[in-house]
Amino acid sequence: MTQLRRWRRRTLGRERRTSWLAVEEGQTMLAGMAAGAVMGIVAILCAAIGGESPIMPFRLAAGVILHDIRRAQPVWLAVPIGAAVHFALCTVYGFFWGLLMTDENGRHRGSRAFQAAMGMALGLAIYLLNIQVIARFWYPSFLNLPQLVLAAIHVLAFGLPLGLLSPIADRRARQKISTTRVTT
Image (cartoon, rainbow, N blue to C red; front, side):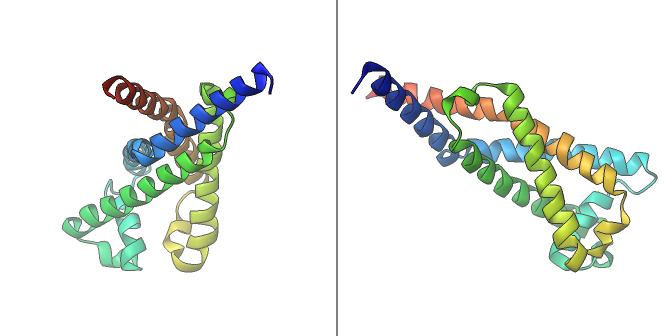
């Protein structure tokens, strides 16, 4: 085996272990929750600017569990249930983001532009799946909202931050590996 092949196998193997460690340690799920927080703040601001109640994003998210947005009318019911649903979904999407980025080769791992583009693509895919497919059949109240604004929120306020937080998750996993090697 040539020197280059050994180097490639060792390098790519380390990259895969690092990204798997980021998934196993929950770093990508934390990145999903942070991106979800950004998305939630932007959704509240968009609702307020659009003349709706700032509680409307919480009511929509709570409507996923309660199966009707009218059941989530009291604020004391809409905010905790809506926040729990929103952050649970963002955590799941962060986990899947980590799995998606695990299969990439090491060449693209450090490129912030590539990860930002992939994050925005994931945000668009989440919008298309959640709003245009699932909501069309089970949650029609989501279709009463401006669809371009919803798409922009998913792409720019969730996907972009998730893509930009991905290198931080990898860096934290690398630090974890290096501290483990030093202590053992």
